[in-house]
Amino acid sequence: MSSLSLAQAQAIVSAALARSRAEGFKPMGIAVLDGAGHLKAFASEDGASMFRFDIARAKAWGAVGMGCSSRTLAQRAKDNPNFFVSLAATAEGKFLPQTGAVVIKSASGEVIGAVGASGGTGDEDELICIAGVEAAGLTAA
Image 1: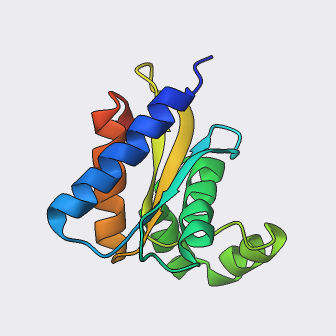
Image 2 (image 1 turned 180 degrees about the vertical axis):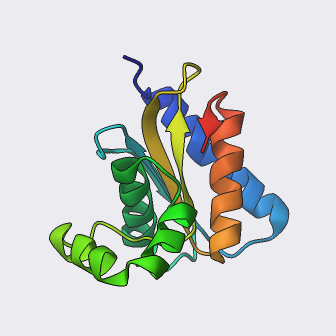
Image 3 (image 1 turned 90 degrees about the vertical axis):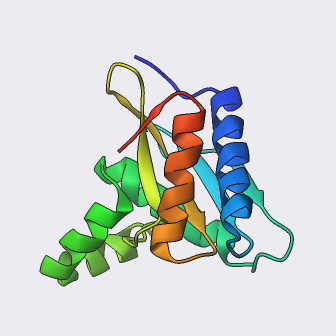
C-alpha cells in the first residue's frame, strides 16, 4: 500500500501556488490530505481570506472520501441534492462537493490522498491542484 509523503504533499502545495501566481489568480489556500483524510500540508497565501483553509480542506476531504474529484461530486449533487446535504451535515461541515479538488493517485493507481484549493473560481482551484499533483510526479483524477 502506497502512502503520500510529507515531501510530496509539500511539493504539491509549492507547485500549485506557483501555478496560481503564474496565472495571476487571487490569493489561494491549498490543503493536501492523506488517504485517510488527515491534513498532510497546508498553505495560505498572504491576503487570502480566513475561509480558505476550511473550504480547501472540505473540498479535498470529500474527494478523498468519495474517491473522485470534487467536480464529479458537484455534478452528482445536482442529481441527488438531499443525499449530499445530508452527507455534509453528517460530516460536520468537512464535506464540500464543489469544484476545486482532485484525488491523488500513486503510480499503481491507488488513491493516496487529495488536494483542494480555495481562492479562485472552481476551475482555477482545480487547475492549480492538478498542476501541483503532476509536478510532484503523481496522478490527479
